[in-house]
Length: 257
Length: 264
Image (cartoon, rainbow over all chains, first blue to last red):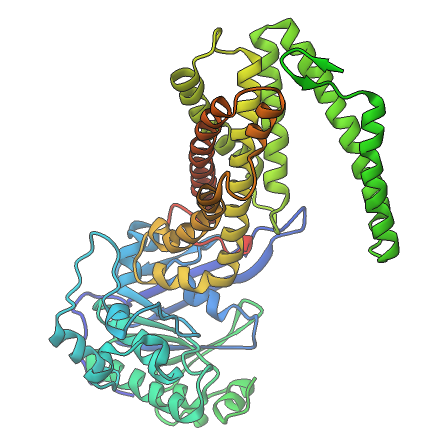
C-alpha cells in the first residue's frame, strides 16, 4: 500500500520499540504480574500499526508505553529519534496523543473540552482553528457550544480525537476507539481515523477488535498473546491473501480471535 | 457531695446508676433483635476501663508536671490517631502510616503552637491542663478530616482514574491531573466543619463548653474558649486533610507524571 504522503524529513521510524517488557509489582508477597515480555516493533513515519490479540494480551499496555503512561520495566521506546526517557513525558504525550476507549469529556461545553490545556502550555484555541479541527473529525462548528454531556457516543469520541489533534501531534494512539460505539458511529470513527492518516500524514497506532478498521487503515498488524509478539504482518495489497497466521486471517475475516 | 467551685463529684454509686442506661440499650437491642447486645456490653466495659485508665494517667502526669511526660502522652495520642485515620481506607497504600503520621503531627503541631503560644499563653507553655486537652481536640479533628479526605480521594481515584489519565494524556502534569480530585476530597473533609460552624451553640452545646459550664465556669468564659476551639478545629481540619491528601496523591503518581494504576 502506498502512503501517498511525504511525512517528516527526519530519518528512521517514528516509534522504535526494542525488547520492551512491563510488569506490575506483586501485592503482599505475590510475584510481579508480567504484562509484556520482549516486545520489539517499529512504526514508520506516517505509518499505521494495529495491535490485536485476546483481552489481557497487553495491547493497551503496549499502547500506553508508547506515550509513557506506563513505565516499562525493561527495554526501550525511541520516539522521533530520542529515547522515551529523554523526553519530558508531558511533551511526549502531546506529540503522541492517546485517545482512550471510553471517551472522557469533562463538565462544560465542547469548546471547554477542546481548549482544555495544562498550565504554561500554549494552545491555539481560536474560533477558526477549533472549527477547522472539528471539521477534520466530521463535526459541525455548531457543536462547539453544546454541553459535552449531551453528545452521542460517536460524537464524544470524535471530540476527544479533535482535542488530541489540536495539540498538533505527530502520532495518534487509539485504544479501541470503536468498541463503545454502535456500528454506524463506529464506521464514522473508522473513516475519520483513516482520513487523518492520509490527509495529515499522521502516524496511527491503534488497538482494535474491528477488522473493518484494520482493513481500511492498512499498515502493519501486531498480534500479541500473553504479552508476547505472536506474529507481525504487513497489510500490503490484499490482506487476506498475504497473511500466513491463521488466527490473523480469521480476525480479518471478522471472526474475533 | 459538692466539691470545690461548684461541680458535683460523682460517686461509684452514681456511676452505677448511669450504667442502668446501658441496660436500657441492651433491652432495646434484644427486643428489636438488633444483635448488638454483645457489642454494647463490650463497648460499655471499654468506656469504663479506657476512661478510668486515661483519668489515672492524666492525674499522674498533671501532678508530676514534667514536660517529657506531656510529650509522651502527645506522641501516644498521635500514634493512635494515625492508626485510626488510615484504618478506614478501603485499600492499602504503601507508606500510608507515615504519611498520615506526618500530616497529623505537622498540622497539629502548627495549630497547637499558635493556639498555645500566641492565643492562650499558659505558664509554663507545656502546662498539661491546657496542652493535653487542646492537642487532643486538634488531633481529633485532623484525624477525622484526614480519614474523610483519604476515603474520598481513594474512592474518586478508583472511579475517575480515566479522567486523570485523560488529562495526563493531554500533557498535564501529575499534580494538575489529580487537582479536581484533590479539591473534591478537601471539600468532603471540610464541609462537616463548616456546617458545624454554622450551627454551633444553636443545636447542641459543644462538648468542651458543656464541660466547662458543668465544672462551674461562667458561660461567658466558656464561650470564649469555645470560639478559640471552633476556629482552631477549622484550621486543624484544613491543614490535616490538605497535607494528608497532598502526600497520599504523591504515592499514586510517579515523577514521570504517571498514575500507579496497580494501587487503585
